[in-house]
Every structure is written in C-alpha cells, then in structure tokens.
Length: 478
Ligand code: NAD
View 1 (cartoon, rainbow, N blue to C red):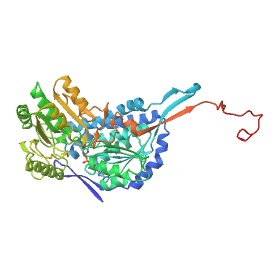
View 2: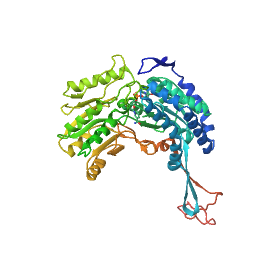
View 3: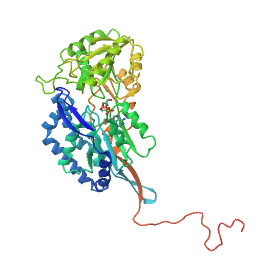
View 4: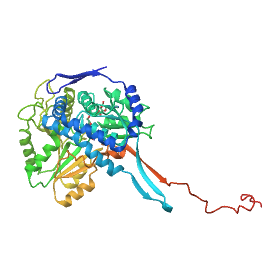
C-alpha cells in the first residue's frame, strides 16, 4: 500500500512510500541482536554517541523536516531535534544508575552479582506529535541495553521516521540492529503480534494502547510498555500573580497546538475567581500567533496534524456546546481547507456528564467549582492520570493537591507539560501501564539476573546424613 505524508501547513505532498515488510524487518533484527548484545557496553555507548554527533551535524535539516511534517513551529522543532541528541547522554547515565552491575556479599563469602540482560528484539511504535524524540526515547535506551529495534513510525510522520533511521545508519548502526518498517495501524498490529518480537514499546493513544494490551494478554513473558494520553487538570487557586497564572495556563494548554500528551485539558478554578482569570487568558489567546511553522514573526502554534483531526476537534467542541458549553474563545478554522485552528476556551461547568476524553488539540475546558475539595474531586474525575498542576495556593494546599491527585507528573506553579527527560515520565490509569519512560526507560529495556558465583565448587552436606558405616538409612523397619 502507498503511504502519503502531507505537510499540514501547505497541503503539499512531502513524502510517499510503500508499506514495509514486517516479517523481513523482524527476521533481520533476530539475526542481528545477539551480535549487538555481545558487544562491550562501551562499544554500544560509543555508537550511540556517534549517532548523537551525526544528528548534531544535521540539526537544521532535521528540525526543518520535523516542522514541515508535523506543522509545529520551527523553533519548537529545533527543541525536539535537540532532545534526540540529548537522549544519548541521559540514557547512558540512566542505564548506569538503574541497571548497572552490582556486587553483593552472599552467605559464607559467596559472591552475588546482579546484572541485566537485554530482552532481544523490541518493537517501537511512535506517535505523530513528537515523531523523532518519543520513539527515540525508547530506541536509545533499548539499544544501549543491547536490544535490536524494529521501529514503525506514525503513518502521519513517515518522513521524520525515515530521517531518524538514516541518522542511525550514518552513525554505523546496521539495518538489523535498528530497522524501520513504514505503515499504519495494521502494520503496527502485525509488528506487535509477531512471534519474533520479545517486547513492544508504545507511545500513542489510549485506544491503541488498550488494543495492544489485549493483544499481549496471552504473552505475559513479553515486555509491553505503554505511554498513552491524558485528560490533564490544571487548578488555579488564590493566584497572587494573575498574569503569570494565565501565562502558565496558556503554555500548558496550547503549546504544540495542544498536541502534547501532557497538555492541560481542564482548567479548574474557584467560582468568582474565574472571571478575572478567564479574561486574562483570553487576552493572551487573542495575541497568540497561529501560522505556518516557518513564518515570521515566529508563531506560537502551527496547524494540527491534518484536516481530519481538525474536523474531529471541531465536532467535539460543537458537541460540548450542544450540551451546555459556553465558548469564551471559539475553535475556528483560520483557512477553510487547512488544519489551522484558533485556541479555544470553553466553559463546560454546565455540561452534564462531561466526556472523559482527550481532545488532542488547542481546546481548554474551564470548570468552576465552589471550594478546594470540589477542585480536587474534579481533578480526579478522569480515568487518565498523566499530568496535573496547581497554580497558586499555599504550601499546605499543594501538599493536599500532591497527595490527593492521581497522576505521574504533578507540578506546582509550573505548566503541566515539558517534563524533564532526566526524570522518570509516565502516567497511571489509562495513561500508562506502570512502565514509566524517560529516565526509567532503562528498567523496561533489560531484565535483572541474579547470580551466586564461586571460582571453584566447594560443598558438603552438613545435616541429615546417616553414618556411612551403617546400612540403608532409609530402612525404617530396621
Ligand atoms: P495513535 O495511538 O493513533 O498511534 C500511535 C502509533 O500506534 C502509530 O504508529 C499507529 O500507527 C500505531 N497504532 C494505532 N493503532 C494501533 C493498533 N491497534 N495496533 C498497533 N498499532 C497501532 O496515536 P497518535 O494519534 O499518533 O498520537 C497521539 C496520542 O499519543 C495522544 O493520545 C497522546 O496523548 C499520545 N502520546 C502519549 C505520550 C506519552 O508519553 N504518554 C507522548 C506523546 C503522545
């Protein structure tokens, strides 16, 4: 099947190619992985550093391609390309920290070693919103640990996927060690279900993650790491600096045109405090530049990924309005046949049975509440559990927020998004399956092996032996 990648900002064709051969990619990886795993750790690290250097040398072209294929502003695409480079040093440190060899003293002077082994061949499925950084965030730690990787990029960003693999190739990583197979959800399913795979590292929607979880139900021996979406709350409470609070809300909800798993989706605010806050937010929204990724002056947001995504978001917002939502800023299409959307703020307090869904775009839903208990209950009114922020509030309030809210990233006076790569990153509930990524990715890329070891076999049976001179010890009648 032919895949076509369209630049969201221009509607022009950026890339065309054919669906890849999953069997061939897995076979190549199976043939290559033990050779890669048996290389000294220092050689694998050296190879990864070469990859980082190749990427550094091509930073401008790499960022340009990310901007064109995703529609995100060039300045933001550069930060993604830089994150790809920085991932190597972070993963080397994380591997040493999380999975380094340890020596313990066992009984009677026995030497006990704890070492880690790679799983073998790991599949990596990537999303479109960070088409380089997020799959790479699985690939680098997997490779450092000694696994071979078969990567399937999102069908919406095949060009960036191919480019990323090209950087590995240029750094001397052979095809079997890192392979790429292009395709859509069906190719993802085929890769996930392949008998030659030892595990799958997935970043994407909860819908696809749940399907994969079912697909892996009969193979508990295979590792499955799921990084999924969120319906993230941001609570603003007694904010002393309204402008700073509004700016943090805007950064949380609209960065990357709201196409971040950690984007704030629900703004929870005390009834009465909401007018001034909403007014301040709206003033910023009216100034946010939505434009082509390469435009001057630089835009804050580009388009969303495609017209289908824009249509779906507009339909979801219409649905909220039909159920009692009130638009403080509408989700408008700037150009009729392009997916540029204006940032929307919808008061959904009066919407009964608010859908617990991730609206993956520049839409923030505001919910007014009478007191802080209601704010906490509202923050937890989701099956997801990725990110949450409290803006304002005294330290005691933050303590309550931190201990009550269920999420893997909980911030105070900081945006919900932009978690540091040097820390673990993951969510609970529908946001993940307790395999946090980033700094803890090392944990799911290798398994621990405990070995009790001695240079020579020395052993005696100390108790329960009959005198060798006597007859059969087990003759109970005797
Ligand atoms: P998606 O789930 O549609 O696709 C992700 C990948 O999975 C793609 O490669 C796709 O082809 C493949 N896929 C889809 N359905 C599949 C199936 N049934 N079986 C096997 N493979 C399948 O996600 P997307 O729309 O590309 O990305 C956006 C989503 O990713 C959002 O929900 C966002 O919150 C989430 N996300 C999560 C994180 C995180 O770290 N938690 C980071 C970024 C994005």
